[in-house]
Length: 172
Image (cartoon, one colour):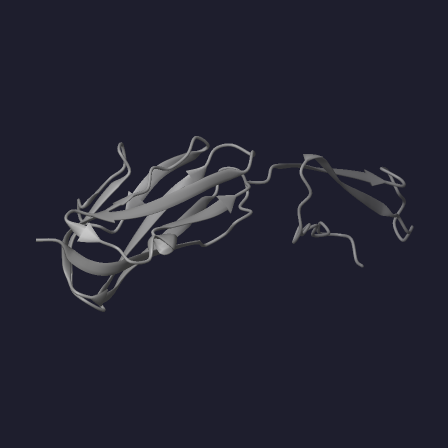
């Protein structure tokens, strides 16, 4: 028999602009909006090139090599959630799409059967240079340190901090 259920999948990401080499976590939520429960629920969510699989919380129900998450039976108004952690290994925008299906199902609203998010990792090559006005000052003489922070790109960055502690024998 064919059941009727409006399956819905939504996908969010923890950070849409992570630093290159950083982890992001995708959260997929599937909902059966009813009116009936259904079996054989499967979500297809293969990570795109530029994202390297790290882990998931599906206890073996998600297969990273194929992107298949076997949700199984989902009762009317029930939800299931999956979190997938991946490392950003490229700086190009990467679209990740999840699509939900079920066997022997009539879905009256196919518009909510897929959900996509874009991750655009950033790379910044930060450099710090330090100079001093007099490398051999006399006692009591004032010297000036100059710090120059440079971002050699290719992307901009924010939240950069520099820590520069004066050595023993110098006062601010």
